[in-house]
Image (cartoon, rainbow, N blue to C red; front, side, top):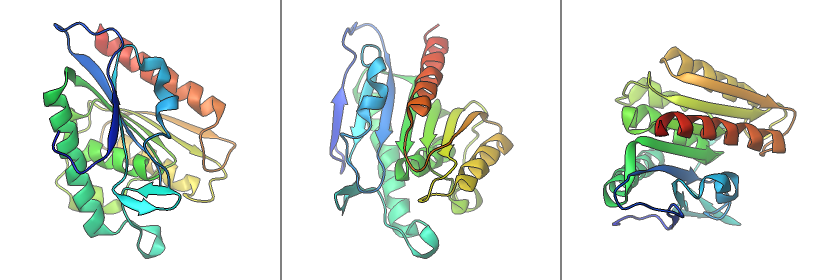
Length: 217
């Protein structure tokens, strides 16, 4: 693939050359890397392509996908570029690997959740579902981007009640935005800060398992 992203890819453990397979695209949070999220979806290694991307910007102790301006908002110029690059990555991956275009899921934490939600709006039915952990939907995405219908979308959105990095109210607002635009939303809150609790992990795995079973029927 011709991509600016460093990434790790695992293919389904038992592949049939005549079949197409689901794909999970993983986007980490600020200061992390491509090794952070695969553990969350290890239950799906047998049936899914899993792509874990590294953000292109050095951000100690790891990397970031975009920079932040005042008021904790994305630097718009950087955000626009990385969102375009991510769309290209997904499209090239779908074309190059044996990926079912109707079984494309994006999972992100922190910055990755912001991008997962944004990708859903700009890619429309090219994204089947998202898992957005401790993120938010930038206002400029729905107000200024050319967005597509998400009425088909299955979204899992979760947040910690005591999140000190991204306030939980932003998670609630994301839920309301996605419902307003017609997506089917599973929303969960947990008595935790900025992280993924065991309960959160159990719920997101159950969500993905349900979606994959439905899509594979």
